[in-house]
Amino acid sequence: MKSISLGQSGLACSRIAYGCWRLAGTWNAAEVAPAAEAVGRRAVLAAFDAGYTLFDNADIYCGGGAEKILGQALKEAPGMRGGIVIASKCGIRPSGAPLPDSPCRYDFSGDYIVSSCEQSLRRLGVETIDLYQLHRPDYLMDPAEIASAFQRLKGAGKVREFGVSNFRPSQVTALQKACPMRLIVNQIEISLANLNCFEDGTLDQCLGEKITPMAWSPLAGGQLGDGAKKLLPSQEGYRVKPLLVAMDLLAKNHGVSRTVLALAWLMKHPSGIVPIIGSTNAARIREAARAAELDLSREDWYRLLEAARGEPLP
Ligand code: NAP
Image (tube, rainbow, N blue to C red; front, side, top):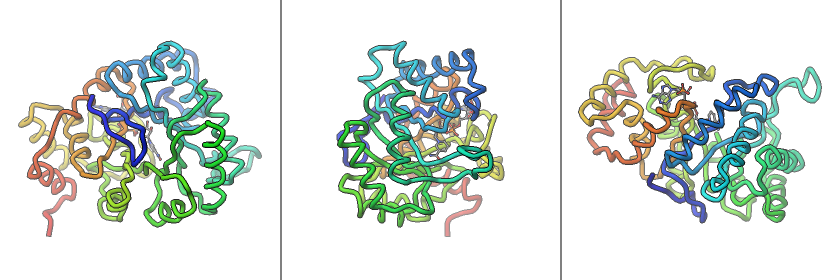
């Protein structure tokens, strides 16, 4: 697969990334059975074989199970670690811990960031995470405290590069001002079913500051592919039927699948959007990789934008 550099760092990876959120098919660590782990490992290895070299993970995916599965796959394929970028995230604390009545919350306090990273390293079975991201903006975040935690992690060789996820441009600016190192990615939801970042300044900032946008749910959780199994509550209201009609027509003209078209549409943007696909099906993982070869014309890109908006541009 073609490759791309992340932000202004020396890290490079495949043009499309592989996302580990759904690897064990559950949020609950207690439900991650050996059979589910085996399915997850097979998906990771299929992605590596298909040329994906960025694996996006998080401490909360499958209650830590997704990092464990990626770690198991690395053991199964000894040459893999050196050939991939491992990305993970921290900062979301699920409800019910440490106290039964603790609410779901975000936590960017320095000690929490450092200890989360150390636990991720243990689950992954590696010494360094290549790209460590803050998952969702903590309402109580203190940029100076985060910067100091980042320096502790970088100084100890535990993290190479840092990024954020779901940050508004003003939050990226506030954190970057406090950080001596460059923030290299902002991971946000971007797809033909969710165009927010084209209009809220996020992609403008990525262009201006050379931050790589990574697109989560690039197929809107499957709604732009062959249908969704499990959606985030925020994605349940997407109305994609008319869009799918336009996509099918254009996909037929190009002789590709709707998935390839949806991903190629994202990659046309000059900010260098890196879609993160989340399928655990080997054939679909391979199919999505084909999108790196399709260069859409401006006309086709705007045709799809119009269909996604549901009305012509002014
Ligand atoms: P997605 O690629 O939009 O959706 C994947 C889902 O679509 C899977 O359940 C898959 O099922 C289904 N699907 C249906 N038809 C498909 C087709 N033709 N090709 C591929 N998949 C098809 O992405 P996502 O899983 O929602 O998210 C991708 C990654 O983004 C996650 O793994 C995670 O790394 C990241 N993420 C980040 C955040 C954040 O806040 N930073 C939030 C959500 C996700 P099958 O497995 O059966 O193929």
